[in-house]
Image (cartoon, rainbow, N blue to C red):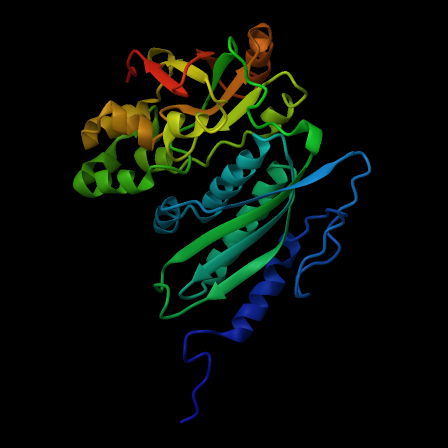
Length: 341
């Protein structure tokens, strides 16, 4: 008997048909994208005469274990917004402008409708963040990846003028620390969330501010790029995207040596969802702060005289408020008070 690739779980004809069906999502009318699907690699026009000293900014990201829930509960387009928003936020906080995104989808069996849903979601999320999906890879790996398992990753290339890189070096004693609200868990803490759901499945019946529990935990990660873009003219001294590791694990990345961000925990506006998870899981405040964003998706530092202007500007898009101050100290983050759930 002659064996075939299809018998091994890979259908080349199906894959070729899928490529044709998703071709409209690649490039999305961006004149800098010089080719579409088909060539061995993507071509992107990298001419930026308006930038004196262009620096390429690169970042890779995946949406973590939230993607398992996305497939299970039917949020396949939504999870792509999670991934791309997280990806772009990570380069935006350094002052970069996103340009081009490449995606990778690894699966055990390619369901065309799910794959197309992923590509559509990624393309739409790129458009929201003013960049383009320029290509990628779909890898069907039967026997390596479970039949109903899909693993998403993406990479972005961005650009910034070398003289305008934001890395926290401009932060000084006396700067104000400003919180920008998250809309929920974003893309971090889902392994603990799923453990709570396994131990206390009745949590799935909860309604949170008029929304089902599943809808609340599957809200896409907030897209902060357009907001950050308003503040990269020197008015802000630093940005920290609050992801895995919480406030301390991420804000500490940009605090210069011999300075400390004093954060008043009582000032943080925690969301009802976090109280629910804390109560059902019996999670300590310390663990909540380490695992979840607790309602703060982005932190901005700024000179005291610019704080009010920043809060006013950001409040057009997201709830925004002061939570602390930069002082002298050897510990980069110091919390005072307690979270209020």
